[in-house]
Every structure is written in C-alpha cells, then in structure tokens.
Amino acid sequence: MNPVVSQPGYGSAVSGSSDWQTGTFDCFDDIGICLCGAFFPLCLSCQIASDMDEFCLCGSSVAMRTMYRTRYGIPGSICKDFLCLAFLPHCTLCQLKRDIEKRKAMNAL
Image (tube, rainbow, N blue to C red; front, top):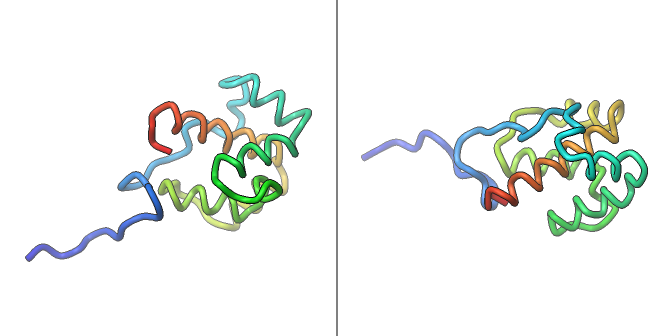
C-alpha cells in the first residue's frame, strides 16, 4: 500500500507547485493588458472576475488573488497578496490577467 504524499488541489489545479507565468513588473509582455490596467483598472478587474466566474467587483480583491494562487499551486501568502494589491495595485492586476491569458493559451485554465 502506497502512502499519500500530496493532497489534491482545488478545482482543476495543476498537480505540484507552479509559479506566476510572468513577473509583477513584466507589463510589456502584453501591452494591451498593461494599458487596460493603467487607464481602466475597474474594467480589468471585471475581466479577471469574469474569467474566474466571480462577481465583477471581486477581481481586484485579496481573496480573488489568493483563490487563484491556491487553485494553481502558486507559492505565496495572503499577507503578500494584500501587500501587492495595496502598494502595486495596477501591476498586480495586470500580472493576474496575464497569467490567466497564458494559462488559457496552454489550455490549463
């Protein structure tokens, strides 16, 4: 009999630990997302929430980022999520949207 060495993840999580597909400051990886985040952050928040089947105004919340991290096994903490959103809100939103788009492209979302 084999012992269980890892617990299943949330939803369709990829097994094991992964990381963000892009860094917080990799804005030029997708200039469209960068411009949307800079000039229309509420619209970007709604897009993120829609991608995650959540309420529109939740896209820029700590809970949304934490849920996404947990779903895909991305290392971090609620405290770090809070600090990122408190001090780098636009960059953090753009990072989340870029990650969603890259996972969609890999059929991992």
